[in-house]
Figure (cartoon, helix red, strand yellow):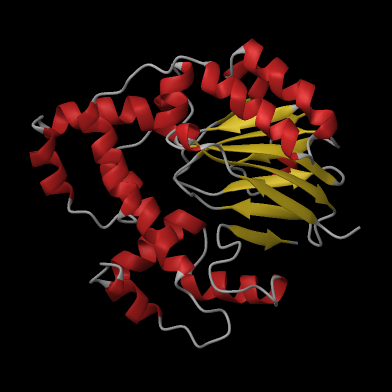
Length: 279
């Protein structure tokens, strides 16, 4: 079976909370995925076999999730081992969005994977699971989007959404010192409130976005100058860039490129950069 992946954009009013939803079905042509940090909170509901998911590189030791899983913002790779065909409905939330919608303290789920049925409100889980039988269809996703729009989101302080939006829009390159000054709050107050809504500090989220933007700029069909890329994205010390990249991906830059070229030979620039196939 050819791997099928369909994305569904939420209505405009929901975009501050939900980046997109998707349907995926098929057999991956490798054993498991290494999923790199992307700055989002992710909920996956399974229609097929259970998934083993966690941060252990010995993937058979990771917990098994029968119905679905949820995790907050990652700072390290997560390993996803389907026990059969991949067949899922997924939701990619802005962390500040899911915090506002459900009141989740995002510090509790940063770098953690938990059962989706335990992490998310029961009424919302029921809505999603009722849509699973038609998860390939737009109407199923429209019903989930409508359920999210009906929730009364707790308003976040404008300075907090401004801080978050500036980091996301600039791909992590907005000067944090200017954002702190603009907020009118002390860095400690900003960091504490930001971590509750996002799960990580502004500095960590900026680093995740900046490394993601760097990977999106890599042309897989051309020679890669990691030194030039590191300089372009603000890493003026090559050793510092290498350390950050290793922490972010679990790989050296050159090994990351080699593994993607091996397993995604037809990948285009910016495509699937947060997934590293593993055999």
